[in-house]
Image (cartoon, rainbow over the protein chains, first blue to last red):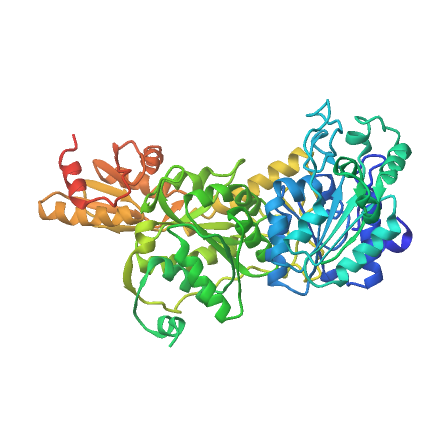
Length: 252
Length: 378
């Protein structure tokens, strides 16, 4: 983190709890840079997170009000906090398992209600904190601790899921493309209503080492090489598309 | 004329218990309700929707009970007195978040209009089977407060008390009502003659710690500039996660316990009926205490020296009062709409025989059955 972002970090911390090579630190930097561009005052910011590695991005690292909640329920807590104090710029930052599996119902209903929050989903494709179990976002064929021979179920396309539910804006970029990520978060924060940014943030510890990409830079290269545009996606059949990450912006 | 004007301005009105709960919540300053429909509590939600939208509050119907209680916690941290209402199945779903509210010292009021369980059970019929769920529903050690109304007037008065205790001690408080009282219609006074307790938002000290063994820390709201760290993980006084420190965890769990147990005399309310010369006494709560009082009167007319000790607070348990009752009478009868949940607790605090009168058929107890039960006691 560059020094000019230090003002956003909570005093008294000596580092994060993320594993070496975790993408979540890059994502945290992207969030803070977007907040910084918009000049949002610290006391007007509320970060809400659930349970899991990504829930530790804001809590306790970011020195604003933070609400570290129950597994899956971040958006439900955020609903009450935001409705009572609409002045709070409310950012829900959590993981793919937290937001789309145990919290999937709250995700689609918050989008349906057009709750004025920005959701940032750190998608590491797996349950990291609990030991690499299959997630609702794990690619078909990827190996996990509960599917050592490869996952058989298709993953959620979270951006399309929230757009179909009523979101005003969604975007997906990998942490290997931080500038696009910052732009997307900034745009999401500017738009009033429910906005969503999915950051593909590979997990070397749990995902990488089970999928022949334990070496961190190789993992990042492989994730980046799987990112395709919407136009490229249209040239692929469904099976091939499901092995890639369609990056870009999704608007109503 | 809207319903609101008619109800609030009249000195005495005929309303059902569920409506009285909503009127009380508004009167004491509740400004957020998040809920999910469930019989037999839904009238509370409908009335809160009317009242909050007519005023300066926030009403939101959430997607399920899990979301409802979580929204209530979030709202409380944004500074609003907040409430939800449900029945047994919803209470079951809310248990994880109730533990969170307890551990993060979040004031809120949860109204449970009990129906006959378990499972879906008899959705429209009365039960008192959630008594242990109030006490032990959460994992870990919790020491909750649960108040039990037996009339529509008490639905009003105890809802106010529930908010005041919740704000004073920074704890979730249950209004442990039942279907019979919730749907009962009686004349009540929706008075404003009560003290309003508000959480202390500013002052010395950190938001999650206190030097006192039973201390209630200050509770700033989101947006106040306090840069709060609220977490359900074990935390230090400032809110930093400290999940590996055995002393911090023990001290936190112990202080939270003391917040309730060091104030039992203040929190516990009981009412005595004809106990002065009683030889046999009912110990009862909620609608079953009405059956018991009717039985006491019939027994007295037959020359049996009967009395009633009624609990308005069931958790923390009125231990001292039950012990004193046991010293005074030869037998205690606990009538309840479950298989003897509270009778079993009462036995722990007296050597006097405690007889459970249990009824699990979705009906209130006919007083004559209690009369017969007492007459046939050994």
